[in-house]
Image (tube, rainbow, N blue to C red; front, side, top):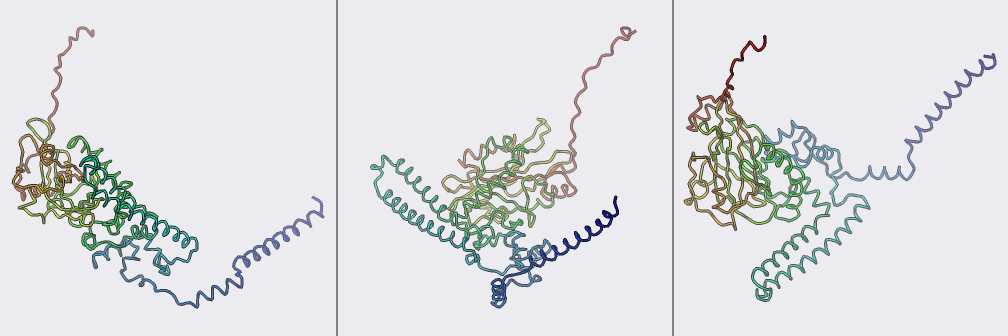
Length: 445
């Protein structure tokens, strides 16, 4: 390398470093620089009074608690569940608490105007459809072609009316926000709020309104119902107990404060007390249901098979979209309970037992006389579910299941329930060996 080149290389390197340093300084200063108009806008915003903020982070507010420890403390002290998702509550801690309808976004406000205009049009269609239904009901049945034709036509018109009610509110962002945040719950739902340990499992809102029932049904079918059907198929509830099952109502089960997921193992001391059900239906009106709890895994030593045992049987239980809580221990023993709660138990050595809780909707909402049926503690040949439901002409609308197995507290549970066999251990019978005949050794010589 020539002497001239050796002199130029350090100078060129120095120039590159100085140029890069100047460029970084220039870009950094430009990135944090603000215009005069923006400065004025920022100063105006700082001078304006701040809106009402949320309470400090130390206060247990169901709108802003975001840690699991504070959520548990909130439930212990006030009995309230957090509102909305944890991510939403964490974001609200630093927000300005601007009302949702007044968000300062022009596109959002213009879109709301279009949605309001569409809703006004749907409300007109709803009013017109109501008038058509009133006219159709006033016309004699002979002009419709008979009683059944008139009844079918009115039912179709009422279904279309319910569809219009849903379409009127399905695009409203305020409705969606209230559903996801858990606002607008009825007083009865607030009392049974402890059934929903996962805050707002199906959202919330006034379940008497068709839009909230539709949103809750859609969310349940895309999440919870899929898990329930998977457990039903994996544990062979279908066809071991019923040949076919299509749940249309969500059934949640809890022992005290413990919410039981479908297929969970429950300790014998926990399941000794009657559970609490939360039956959420998604169509309007009050109806009567029948609740049956079965154990299809009762060992039968004589037949070397399994029988079915009834653990609970109750009829004439009223439920509605906004009245969902059913406490089995509080049902009337005179007009509702046919078979009181028998604690689930499994003898030592037997495989786990499946406990299935079925909810049947009674036909036409008619009451069932408790004197018509007698549910004995043990039934020869096992409890036949189809025999009772066929007589009642009911249809299954919901199901829940859990499992139990022999544990340390099972013997005490069986003794307190008056069940014999706690000192018996079941063992599998060894298969008989095939007859063996010693072969002649001379053939191997």
